[in-house]
Length: 327
Image (cartoon, rainbow, N blue to C red):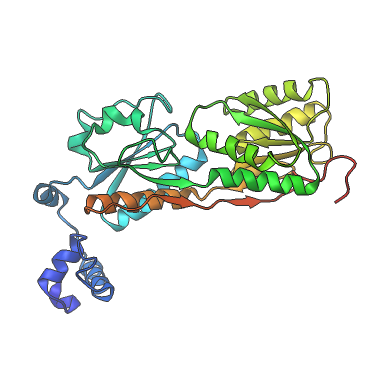
């Protein structure tokens, strides 16, 4: 392989061992990788594990598999892992965001590190103890001593939604929050309250489990209350927003003519409903990719900085000026 790439055996060893950065030029590393592909090289992973004391396996812990967001996180992490001959095991915690039991006889002998999405460091004690490196995604930056975090700017996402609705003329808001006690949903509530704080807008908050039927029932009850009805409903997730669309239809309200509705996530569901949802797009694959790169850096002895990724408001047909206001 060294002859095929025109480099030294030491350079080949550094590149194949993923220790070339700062010691071998990028062009040289690419020549080695090309030669390896052309020659059909496959590493002996069992021998490498014995030699390096590594399993080249990471565990990605998520609260549930029902969310499209976590599928994107896994896809991004697995893509980066494959580039470095790593494997990623996806583990949905059977207790959701609560304490996650160890899925192995001993995770500390089966894994090199843990990536956890939308959970707290304290819920992972049984898995990692004090030994396994940890990277936290969409989680409290102060929740795990020494843990690297890769977060989404969720507070800014809700500020973008609020500014959009305020610009349309809305002043009566309902926040349909996810009934989940986690950092990511607290950030959404804080961002919305912050954006509406100086606007003289009225904001009322209700909570519902992250299901369409639960959101429908909660929104129906809130929209039936006496007094001035909200003209805009901001939801923590697109699933909740779809429940609001169902509630509005059952009550004879037009969306967006009588009621504007916005969500978060930009799931496939957001463009499968009518009207299509205004929502905050979350780059789930980027989150997973950044998380895997951070874990690889930790395993190489570095301390990567924590990262916050931007989110983007996508305006669609479910939001418009409130009744009595023109565009």
